[in-house]
Length: 189
Image (cartoon, rainbow, N blue to C red; front, side, top):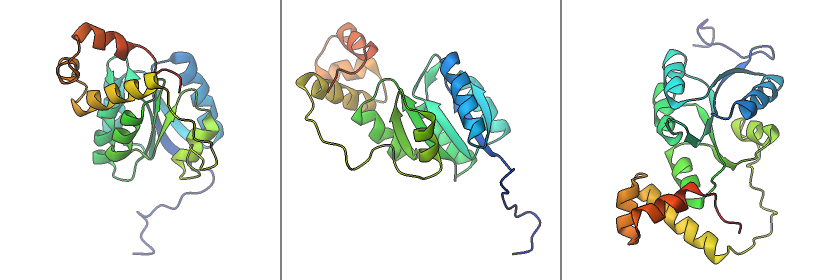
């Protein structure tokens, strides 16, 4: 109904509610300042547990989630946020970028997947539906053999629901070797 008072129109002074889940405190503080300048009302937490509590209390319109948190995996929160509020726009950030995890994030409902260090402008553009962080004008550089191996391991790891033992079995690799590989950053392209 057009005149319904429950229908709320956003004014320029009405901030958008954003949930920021980042366990790196200095980065979290910087992002809070940048998002507030961009007009968001920011709720920032450092753990998956706190994020679940905040989301249950007040489902956000927007969310920026770190992929690897001290108490879990940021992907665990995507479905929860979308169940609580179907239109939530979610951006995943990670320091361990891989094609496999980006595909999993996008299929789960995230609107974008950004490798750290992503600047606040890129994140805001992704949240608001602007240009994707990946432009079509970039020159494609073939991946190195180490990067291809890394991507394959990450893809199998995601297919095994991040179960190290099952991934090691499928890759016919010792579990400790796989753990060492997974704890390292992705090799350069």
